[in-house]
Image (tube, rainbow, N blue to C red; front, side, top):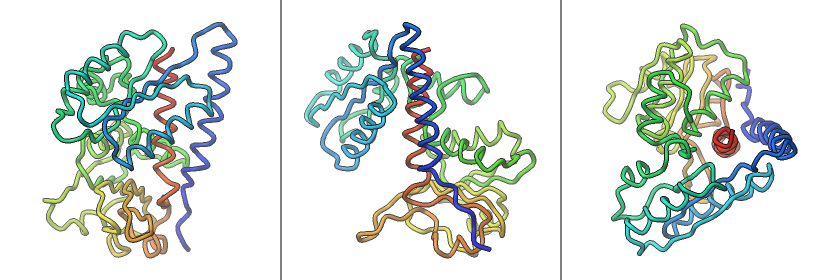
Length: 279
Protein backbone atom coordinates (compact mmCIF):
# COMPACT_ATOMS: atom_id res chain seq x y z
CA UNK A 1 0.00 0.00 0.00
CA UNK A 2 1.44 3.43 -0.91
CA UNK A 3 2.49 5.75 1.89
CA UNK A 4 -0.02 8.12 3.41
CA UNK A 5 0.93 11.72 2.69
CA UNK A 6 1.41 14.27 5.47
CA UNK A 7 -0.09 17.41 3.94
CA UNK A 8 1.98 20.36 5.19
CA UNK A 9 -0.18 22.89 3.33
CA UNK A 10 -3.35 21.73 5.07
CA UNK A 11 -1.73 21.51 8.50
CA UNK A 12 -0.13 24.96 8.11
CA UNK A 13 -3.51 26.44 7.14
CA UNK A 14 -5.07 25.02 10.31
CA UNK A 15 -2.27 26.61 12.38
CA UNK A 16 -2.68 29.97 10.61
CA UNK A 17 -6.46 29.89 11.16
CA UNK A 18 -5.93 29.22 14.89
CA UNK A 19 -3.37 32.04 15.10
CA UNK A 20 -5.72 34.49 13.37
CA UNK A 21 -8.37 33.78 15.99
CA UNK A 22 -5.84 34.10 18.80
CA UNK A 23 -4.50 37.43 17.49
CA UNK A 24 -8.01 38.79 17.02
CA UNK A 25 -8.82 37.90 20.65
CA UNK A 26 -5.55 39.50 21.84
CA UNK A 27 -6.27 42.77 20.04
CA UNK A 28 -9.95 42.81 21.11
CA UNK A 29 -8.77 42.43 24.72
CA UNK A 30 -6.72 45.61 24.32
CA UNK A 31 -3.34 43.92 23.84
CA UNK A 32 -0.78 44.99 21.27
CA UNK A 33 -0.79 43.42 17.82
CA UNK A 34 2.20 41.04 17.41
CA UNK A 35 4.92 42.56 15.21
CA UNK A 36 7.59 40.90 13.04
CA UNK A 37 10.52 42.62 11.29
CA UNK A 38 12.23 40.79 8.44
CA UNK A 39 15.69 42.00 7.40
CA UNK A 40 16.88 41.07 3.91
CA UNK A 41 20.43 41.92 2.80
CA UNK A 42 21.22 41.74 -0.92
CA UNK A 43 19.04 40.39 -3.73
CA UNK A 44 19.22 36.59 -3.50
CA UNK A 45 16.12 35.49 -5.52
CA UNK A 46 15.29 32.57 -3.19
CA UNK A 47 15.57 34.83 -0.13
CA UNK A 48 13.36 37.45 -1.79
CA UNK A 49 10.73 34.78 -2.46
CA UNK A 50 10.84 33.51 1.14
CA UNK A 51 10.52 37.06 2.50
CA UNK A 52 7.49 37.82 0.32
CA UNK A 53 5.84 34.56 1.46
CA UNK A 54 6.45 35.49 5.11
CA UNK A 55 5.00 38.97 4.57
CA UNK A 56 1.88 37.49 2.96
CA UNK A 57 1.44 34.99 5.81
CA UNK A 58 1.75 37.79 8.41
CA UNK A 59 -0.98 39.79 6.66
CA UNK A 60 -3.22 36.73 6.53
CA UNK A 61 -3.19 36.12 10.31
CA UNK A 62 -3.06 39.74 11.48
CA UNK A 63 0.61 40.16 12.44
CA UNK A 64 2.06 43.64 11.91
CA UNK A 65 5.11 43.24 9.67
CA UNK A 66 8.00 45.36 8.49
CA UNK A 67 10.46 44.56 5.75
CA UNK A 68 13.94 46.07 5.79
CA UNK A 69 15.64 45.52 2.43
CA UNK A 70 19.31 46.48 2.55
CA UNK A 71 21.91 46.46 -0.25
CA UNK A 72 24.65 43.83 -0.22
CA UNK A 73 27.13 46.72 -0.07
CA UNK A 74 26.00 47.67 3.45
CA UNK A 75 28.63 47.19 6.17
CA UNK A 76 28.18 44.72 9.00
CA UNK A 77 28.17 47.66 11.46
CA UNK A 78 25.28 49.26 9.55
CA UNK A 79 23.36 45.98 9.63
CA UNK A 80 23.93 45.66 13.38
CA UNK A 81 22.65 49.23 13.80
CA UNK A 82 19.40 48.28 12.04
CA UNK A 83 19.01 45.27 14.34
CA UNK A 84 19.71 47.44 17.38
CA UNK A 85 16.91 49.84 16.37
CA UNK A 86 14.54 46.89 15.99
CA UNK A 87 15.66 45.48 19.36
CA UNK A 88 14.45 48.74 20.94
CA UNK A 89 11.25 49.11 18.90
CA UNK A 90 8.20 48.25 21.08
CA UNK A 91 6.08 47.50 17.97
CA UNK A 92 8.45 44.67 17.01
CA UNK A 93 8.25 41.41 18.98
CA UNK A 94 10.18 39.21 16.54
CA UNK A 95 13.24 39.88 14.37
CA UNK A 96 14.24 37.62 11.50
CA UNK A 97 17.42 38.17 9.49
CA UNK A 98 17.02 36.21 6.26
CA UNK A 99 19.89 33.75 5.77
CA UNK A 100 22.22 33.21 4.04
CA UNK A 101 23.81 36.65 4.24
CA UNK A 102 26.06 37.82 1.39
CA UNK A 103 29.80 37.21 1.58
CA UNK A 104 31.67 39.38 4.04
CA UNK A 105 29.14 39.12 6.88
CA UNK A 106 29.68 37.05 10.02
CA UNK A 107 26.30 35.37 10.40
CA UNK A 108 26.90 34.32 14.00
CA UNK A 109 27.80 37.88 15.06
CA UNK A 110 24.60 39.13 13.39
CA UNK A 111 22.43 36.45 15.04
CA UNK A 112 24.04 37.13 18.42
CA UNK A 113 23.02 40.79 18.12
CA UNK A 114 19.29 39.99 18.08
CA UNK A 115 17.76 40.12 21.58
CA UNK A 116 17.06 36.50 22.61
CA UNK A 117 13.44 37.39 23.45
CA UNK A 118 12.95 38.65 19.85
CA UNK A 119 14.85 35.77 18.21
CA UNK A 120 11.84 34.07 16.62
CA UNK A 121 14.16 31.96 14.42
CA UNK A 122 15.54 30.30 17.56
CA UNK A 123 19.17 30.66 16.43
CA UNK A 124 20.60 32.78 19.27
CA UNK A 125 23.07 30.80 21.45
CA UNK A 126 20.95 31.47 24.55
CA UNK A 127 17.88 29.97 22.88
CA UNK A 128 19.91 27.06 21.51
CA UNK A 129 21.23 26.41 25.03
CA UNK A 130 17.71 26.48 26.45
CA UNK A 131 16.57 23.98 23.81
CA UNK A 132 19.47 21.65 24.62
CA UNK A 133 18.65 21.74 28.34
CA UNK A 134 14.90 21.25 27.86
CA UNK A 135 13.85 24.78 28.85
CA UNK A 136 10.97 26.72 27.28
CA UNK A 137 12.32 28.75 24.37
CA UNK A 138 11.83 29.60 20.71
CA UNK A 139 12.27 26.38 18.75
CA UNK A 140 13.82 26.85 15.25
CA UNK A 141 10.93 26.98 12.81
CA UNK A 142 11.67 24.02 10.52
CA UNK A 143 12.35 21.54 13.37
CA UNK A 144 9.21 22.79 15.15
CA UNK A 145 7.28 22.18 11.92
CA UNK A 146 8.69 18.65 11.64
CA UNK A 147 7.49 17.85 15.17
CA UNK A 148 4.01 19.24 14.43
CA UNK A 149 3.83 16.97 11.38
CA UNK A 150 4.77 13.97 13.49
CA UNK A 151 2.16 14.97 16.09
CA UNK A 152 -0.47 15.22 13.33
CA UNK A 153 -0.22 11.50 12.57
CA UNK A 154 -0.39 10.53 16.24
CA UNK A 155 2.92 8.66 16.41
CA UNK A 156 4.31 7.86 19.86
CA UNK A 157 8.06 8.40 19.53
CA UNK A 158 8.96 6.62 22.77
CA UNK A 159 11.53 3.95 22.00
CA UNK A 160 11.38 4.54 18.27
CA UNK A 161 14.61 4.56 16.26
CA UNK A 162 14.93 8.02 14.68
CA UNK A 163 17.61 8.80 12.11
CA UNK A 164 18.37 12.41 11.16
CA UNK A 165 20.41 12.90 7.99
CA UNK A 166 22.03 16.33 8.29
CA UNK A 167 23.75 18.11 11.17
CA UNK A 168 23.10 21.80 10.50
CA UNK A 169 22.42 24.21 13.34
CA UNK A 170 19.19 25.20 11.58
CA UNK A 171 17.60 21.74 11.17
CA UNK A 172 19.67 18.64 11.91
CA UNK A 173 20.90 19.34 15.44
CA UNK A 174 17.70 20.90 16.83
CA UNK A 175 15.38 18.29 15.31
CA UNK A 176 17.57 15.54 16.82
CA UNK A 177 17.26 17.24 20.22
CA UNK A 178 13.48 17.51 19.92
CA UNK A 179 13.20 13.83 18.98
CA UNK A 180 15.39 12.95 21.96
CA UNK A 181 13.10 14.94 24.25
CA UNK A 182 10.23 12.74 23.02
CA UNK A 183 12.17 9.61 24.11
CA UNK A 184 13.22 8.49 20.64
CA UNK A 185 16.61 6.83 20.20
CA UNK A 186 18.36 9.22 17.84
CA UNK A 187 21.20 8.76 15.35
CA UNK A 188 22.59 11.81 13.52
CA UNK A 189 24.12 11.06 10.12
CA UNK A 190 26.05 13.32 7.76
CA UNK A 191 28.35 13.33 4.72
CA UNK A 192 31.10 11.48 6.61
CA UNK A 193 28.83 8.69 7.89
CA UNK A 194 29.86 5.18 6.86
CA UNK A 195 27.11 3.01 5.34
CA UNK A 196 24.56 5.83 5.27
CA UNK A 197 21.95 3.72 3.47
CA UNK A 198 22.22 1.03 6.17
CA UNK A 199 21.77 3.62 8.93
CA UNK A 200 18.65 4.97 7.20
CA UNK A 201 17.22 1.45 6.83
CA UNK A 202 17.16 1.12 10.64
CA UNK A 203 14.87 4.14 11.09
CA UNK A 204 11.27 4.04 12.25
CA UNK A 205 11.35 7.81 11.69
CA UNK A 206 13.69 9.21 9.03
CA UNK A 207 14.27 12.98 8.76
CA UNK A 208 16.37 14.04 5.76
CA UNK A 209 17.81 17.57 5.60
CA UNK A 210 20.94 17.73 3.45
CA UNK A 211 19.96 19.55 0.24
CA UNK A 212 21.01 16.63 -1.98
CA UNK A 213 18.29 15.99 -4.60
CA UNK A 214 16.63 12.56 -4.29
CA UNK A 215 19.45 11.12 -2.19
CA UNK A 216 17.25 8.66 -0.31
CA UNK A 217 16.03 5.79 -2.47
CA UNK A 218 13.39 3.16 -1.79
CA UNK A 219 15.93 0.56 -0.64
CA UNK A 220 17.19 3.04 2.02
CA UNK A 221 13.82 3.03 3.77
CA UNK A 222 12.44 0.55 6.30
CA UNK A 223 8.96 -0.65 5.20
CA UNK A 224 6.30 1.35 7.04
CA UNK A 225 8.72 4.08 8.25
CA UNK A 226 7.72 7.71 8.65
CA UNK A 227 9.83 9.79 6.23
CA UNK A 228 10.09 13.57 6.63
CA UNK A 229 11.77 15.27 3.66
CA UNK A 230 13.16 18.72 4.60
CA UNK A 231 15.22 19.20 1.44
CA UNK A 232 14.18 21.33 -1.52
CA UNK A 233 16.13 21.64 -4.77
CA UNK A 234 15.52 22.55 -8.39
CA UNK A 235 16.37 19.87 -10.94
CA UNK A 236 15.69 21.44 -14.32
CA UNK A 237 12.18 22.85 -14.06
CA UNK A 238 11.17 20.38 -11.33
CA UNK A 239 11.20 21.02 -7.57
CA UNK A 240 12.34 17.93 -5.64
CA UNK A 241 13.33 16.98 -2.12
CA UNK A 242 16.11 14.90 -0.62
CA UNK A 243 13.91 11.81 -0.95
CA UNK A 244 13.08 10.08 -4.26
CA UNK A 245 9.35 10.56 -3.68
CA UNK A 246 7.87 8.35 -6.39
CA UNK A 247 9.80 5.25 -5.36
CA UNK A 248 9.91 5.84 -1.58
CA UNK A 249 6.11 6.28 -1.41
CA UNK A 250 5.82 2.57 -2.31
CA UNK A 251 7.78 1.58 0.83
CA UNK A 252 7.19 4.20 3.54
CA UNK A 253 4.16 4.26 5.83
CA UNK A 254 4.00 8.07 5.92
CA UNK A 255 5.78 10.56 3.67
CA UNK A 256 5.95 14.35 3.25
CA UNK A 257 5.79 15.80 -0.27
CA UNK A 258 8.07 18.45 -1.79
CA UNK A 259 6.75 21.04 -2.32
CA UNK A 260 3.79 21.23 0.05
CA UNK A 261 5.31 19.44 3.02
CA UNK A 262 7.75 20.94 5.50
CA UNK A 263 8.03 24.33 3.70
CA UNK A 264 4.57 25.70 4.62
CA UNK A 265 5.05 24.43 8.18
CA UNK A 266 8.26 26.45 8.59
CA UNK A 267 6.40 29.70 7.93
CA UNK A 268 3.49 28.64 10.16
CA UNK A 269 5.91 28.06 13.05
CA UNK A 270 7.56 31.46 12.47
CA UNK A 271 4.13 33.04 12.92
CA UNK A 272 3.56 30.89 16.03
CA UNK A 273 6.88 32.05 17.54
CA UNK A 274 6.05 35.70 16.77
CA UNK A 275 2.72 35.46 18.59
CA UNK A 276 4.45 33.76 21.53
CA UNK A 277 7.01 36.60 21.62
CA UNK A 278 4.18 39.13 21.95
CA UNK A 279 2.69 37.39 25.00
